[in-house]
Every structure is written in C-alpha cells, then in structure tokens.
Length: 452
Image (cartoon, rainbow, N blue to C red; front, side, top):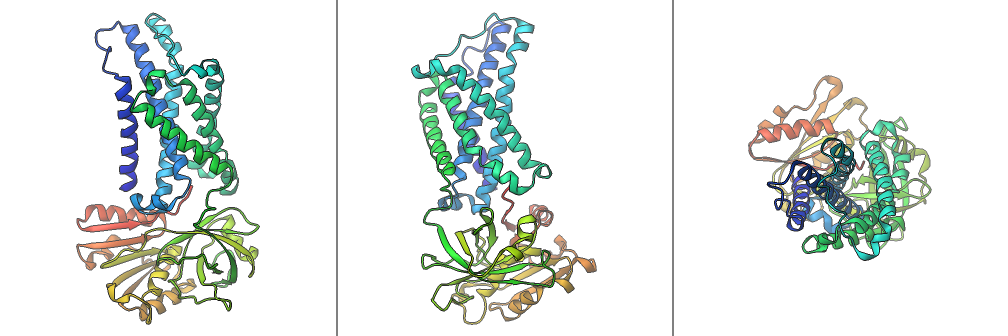
C-alpha cells in the first residue's frame, strides 16, 4: 500500500508542477481544428517527458539503498518494489513521449501544417545542442525499453548477464538528463517546475555518477567480514539449504530479528539479499571476539546452487545492512514458505530461554509450508525452537507431499484481528493477501525479496 501511495504521489506531483507552468486549459477552446491537434501534441510531448525523466530520477535515487528510505516505505524490499515500478512507469511515459513526437507526420497528413506551434525557446547554451540532445534521447529511449523488457520477461536473460547489462542504466539516465536539460522549454524553468526539475536532475545525476563509480553499498553501512564456517543442511548439494556463518568486524552494530543483509562473497558476483537466520548474539563469537552472523541460503538459481562449492572458511565477505522491518510487535500469525522461514528462525531464537527482552513479546502461531516434511532439513530446527520458545509459538506444519497445503481457512481460528507476517513464494503471498483483503481486521505484512 505504501508503494502505491508513494508512486501515485510522485506521479501527481510531477503532473501538478507541469500544469502550473503549462496551463493546458488556456487557449484550447475555440481554436481551429488543426491548431488544436498541434497544441495537443505539444502538451502530450512535454507532459510525457516530465513523467519519464521524473520517474527515472526516482529510480536513480532509490538505487542508492539509503537506510532512511526504509522508514517511509516500510523496508528496503519495498524500496526495490518502488524502484521497479518507477522504472516501468518511466518506460511507459517514454513510449508516450516517443509516440507524441512521431505523431507530427500523421497530423500533417490529415490536418496540414497550419497552426503548428513555433519551436519553443530553450536555455541559451542549449540552442546549438538541440540535434545532439534529440539523438541521445532517442538512443537512450530504445536502450531503456530493451532493459525494461529484459527485466520483466525474465526468461529472455538469466540474472547474471542481466545484472551486468543493468549497470548501463546510470549512463542512460545521464543521456536522458542532458536531453531534458537541452530541450525543456525556457518557460518551464519557472517555479514550481523549474525548481523541481533542477532538484530531480541534480539528485539523479549525482546518484548516476555514484553508481557508475561503484560506490553503492560502500558507505558506513558496509562491513568487511569473513566466512567462518559453511555447512550443508541436508544430503544433497545444490538442493538443500546452505548455512553460512559470517564473522563480523567490530564496526557491526547488530541487527533486529527478521532483518536481512546484502552479502557479496569474494571472487563471486555482486551483492545478493539474504535473511539473517539468527537472533542477535545467538551464534556467539570467534575466539578473537568477532560476533557471528548466520545466513541460511536456499538454492534457487545458478548463483545460490553453486555456493556450496565456492565458499570456504576464511573467505572474505562484504555485508551491507541490516535492512528490513520484519519485526512486528503484538499478537502475530507467522506464515513461512520454504526458505521464507529464515526470518522466523531469528525471531524464534530471540524467544529462547535466556534471551533478552522476551517479556514484551506475545504468543505467536507459525504456519510452516514445506514441499516434503520428511526431507526438510530445516524442519527439525524449527520444531526445537518452537518447543522451547518463551512466550510460546504454536507450530503447524503444512506438508504438500501429503496434500496438506495452507489455505486461508487455516488462519480463521486465530481470530478476527490478526497481525500476519508472511515470507514465502509469490503464490502463497497472493493467496493470503486475497484472504486478508476480504477479512476486516487482518493486517498482512509481507517482504518482497524479488530484486529484479
């Protein structure tokens, strides 16, 4: 919901700023038909351009992964959701912008060139750069459209080459920013549009340059650690989860149960999000006093399937975070699907005897969905933690191999005022979300870890 509100508010702000300087309602009534269509084309051209560069600027800002972004949106995973939808919005607006530009031929054929507006004045320095700015904008438009298609149609390109290709996005933004700066009408530089565009282009360009310099994730929130131990949780490598203990440096300030980090292992590809599967302090520390952090990694793609063979104790790892707000208070119902149980492992460890601040917690219900309970290497650990949890956590296992799949009816006995925390596959999340929409008093919190 927050992502929808933020997206809508951003779009509305861009539109209102355009309306304040373009005044599209002025001069439209009573004009000859050819003039009307030429004016309509011009307004559509500028409005779609404002939408496209405004959304692209938001994309670049969100790509910085700053922790202050989590509070208004509800977590870093929601920041990435807004990042994705702003990118789609920018591409759609760019298509509209291109369509408005290309419509001149149709208008000329049907109504003629009479009434076509004169070329708008631009900033003085940009007069000699019009042609270059138009060409750069067109090339960047085609590249942006291709990247959005490859992002949404994931079967066309695996994640690893897509990620490398995605790194050109900041360069495309700089091309589009120059296109906007050189071609935006001089009249649009009045307030509020002028101030808004100056801020957007400035912030977006700084973010793009920061990204091209490889500085994202390298600030105070980044920590250089070391792989302390690696253990396969099951008999089959590449299928069963992998437990990785990371020795953190003294700069690590700790985390809250249920949060996640971006981990970059030395010699492998860039950062990937993994949920922290341990409560603060539950893994102890190394002999030299470095705190240990547990990650449980499910083999879901080429990268994670190969980690069991690639990771060795002593290997360097860069940990960025922690992020996320998977830490609700009050009476809760937890729904975990597969590897989605990892944030709940941390929450369960925080309820073990001797853990701090358990007095403020309330009893919870955990619905754990697994494909095959008999072969689930994590399930025994989940059972043990639930049996020892204080306050208690009631565990209900849904074994798909036995035909027992979670249905919304399983949640009804818990009451009409539920605080549901869910982490799992998209299909499971959709089913629970639809049920929550129908049940007044059910509040669903779901983290979305799909970063593409």
